[in-house]
Image 1 (cartoon, rainbow, N blue to C red):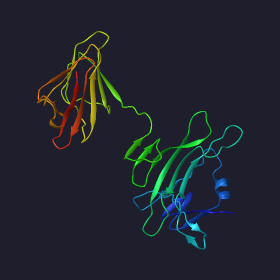
Image 2 (spheres, helix red, strand yellow; image 1 turned 120 degrees about the vertical axis):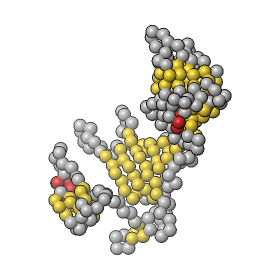
Image 3 (cartoon, rainbow, N blue to C red; image 1 turned 60 degrees about the vertical axis):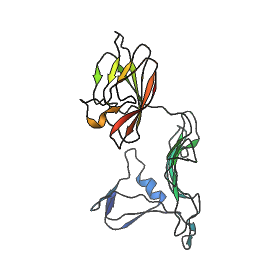
Image 4 (cartoon, rainbow, N blue to C red; image 1 turned 180 degrees about the vertical axis):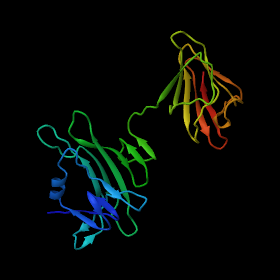
Length: 262
């Protein structure tokens, strides 16, 4: 029978255990954690971090372990449920894997994230963090820091026209600002400045049909780091069905208008 060994330093596990090894067999775990309120809690004292869950992998045997092979699982965290007739196999999991054959100078790894879609029973790889830090969503071989294979959507914030200017405008995390007409009508809208810019951030601004939006150049009443530099160095009014792109320049601490369609 295989044993699962959890090693803790100054750790309590079910009872207080200090500087000891706690050896749990599959049977003892099952007997201990069988009630609906049972949990496994790892508590560590006198250190700045919490309890560890560590997986180890090696080729060979316990008596003569060898180097870990490529595509080996270092740690598998899986989750099962009950269908009403029996427990399933793993339907969601996080797998920490080797990304190359290991040696004393090469220990490459990656992480797989798997889920099961509604009304199906097969767990599929959805996201991967590769050895170089590239993240793939829908792509198993990410070629950039974020590689998305499929559609993605940006959050949009709607401004109702006729409310006057907006100083240090809070986008609430939205990358798209849309200016719309309220039910009772209204004229154009003005954006004096936008808060929360960081270097390289992009925001899209556009008015819907029947409205307009004016982007104020270097608004003196706004916080300096939230101001906008337009391409004309003057206020720019974007008519209905037009739009503009703003890019935050961390060097000058300003938004820059880099494109306009009117």
